[in-house]
Image (cartoon, rainbow, N blue to C red):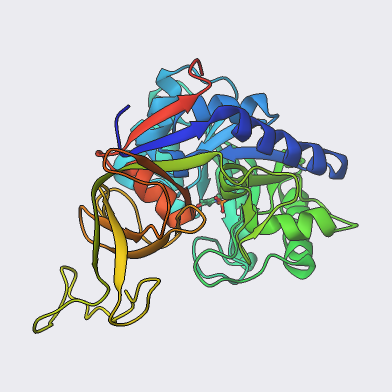
Length: 362
Ligand SMILES: *Cc1c(COP(=O)(O)O)cnc(C)c1O
């Protein structure tokens, strides 16, 4: 089979989604499944919906276009503010988008009316992480503006924390969002369908909270696809951690000196590599090292998890060097690696990495 490849176990994705949906439903919180780490894969989107997600979202218009061509049921949401240059495509592929800018809303309105559609809007509120968001004092005015534009429908409000600055979505932040929801409703005179509290980093709060206030939606990607929560990258109980695995093939196996020899300067990426490759026999000894045909063009070294008993020694554009110890490995064998978020995103977006789904019919 083609290597390197990303193996996606759709049953595990579905299980992870369902487990979280089952824990959040009693609290009145729905799940919007986020596909961006999987390049907007329709198979992954379908697994999220089978697991009980009420809709799917992605940060890229191209990914949403993939989902639309595959006739994914359920509403689609663009979770990054639209570019002004792209509003026509946005209304064509997304039912809803997350927004913060008046000019973009006006452009979206015009594009929606040209298309004979009504586009849903969730206004994002800045609560301290300093990424996207309207300052709290201006949210109600923005809601009134949306209400005045016939091509748009105000679906709700939302916030996003723990992305740029690592600000924790806690009870105080969520209470503030609930309060903003109340004020917006008072100004607009109708109830908001969606109060979206945030991303996977909200799970600790949501699962522990006794009062979730007005929060009724979370946008979950990482927690479902990797089974970890992003604040401390702890595994979430009951979830599979290996729904996505990277498989790479060994192209050289040799016992070599643990230390390089000759004059040393920068490596291929402008770094001065530390002399870490001491191998299992220590300095002056030798290392039984394998080279895999996978590199930084395929995956990020950060978050790449080798099989037990195998250590990563280094990676360049096209080669991953590992210490295989006394593992039964030979040239042509494949090794399987776990993935962190950065490693998964790189693998899913690399043109060199095939994606293979199990079970095959997705
Ligand atoms: C990426 C993203 C999400 C999903 O984040 P995860 O940590 O993968 O759950 C949700 N909302 C927005 C705005 C995002 O950019």
